[in-house]
Image (cartoon, rainbow, N blue to C red):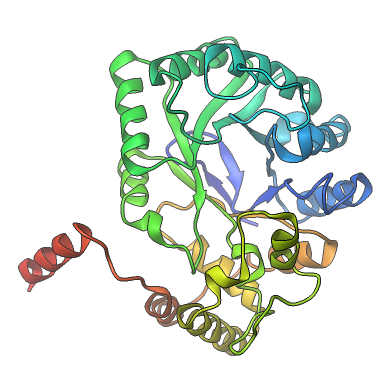
Length: 340
């Protein structure tokens, strides 16, 4: 597995990041430990979790495993914003105000059994917390040595640029990464977030790079419900945001069919092709792979160590392209006409 620099920082991370969201939920601790061991054996060093995942259990599983590892050889990322489910309710139990951030970083450090967090990410924009308060608090955590780098997740283009500009103006630690939804079926961040990230030197960490299983080859045209035992079936049962109806359309089937065809052409599974496509996207540092079992993890790890050719990338680009919204469509037409 290749090692890359995170954005413009000096931090070196593996080209795939292991997401720990399933740990403590679909994967028990024993399985979680096996997946962490397997990921490191494959050359990975980058692990992502969050305080909200399974009410903190994900961080705890990673922490107990981490206690037996060489800490400096690993890059641990976690997130703050939503707190831990199941905690007593209260007005300061979530958000990006100073009180909550400081309390949660201490709680995450305890659960992770570490003295510092390599990448501390705000999980989503908080309209109720002044941005200057959030950024100055994160800056203090870096200065105190509790956090090495800070990043953002689930921001819009203007929110990300505003945070970057404010940090620059005030001499505060800048965001160095953006964790965002990005895959062959969800390419909207290319309209604003990718240009901002590339221009400002942030490394992009795509979450849900297989769109919850849609890009694994399990789904095909003509289906009227998700396959039994899949994440989408579980999501619908649990009331999560993912639904079969959202993606069961001609656009998806066209992408999946192209994906399967290129998989057959290259000798790689559709999931590996989808991940490899992401590895070649502008600004992407490391897609975050998640797994519910060892078979899924091993399949995902097979995305590294090879590359789609230019024609295959172009074919996937074409199949997954979305019509540009205003004003991006107008700007693209003018640029194209000027180039001619």
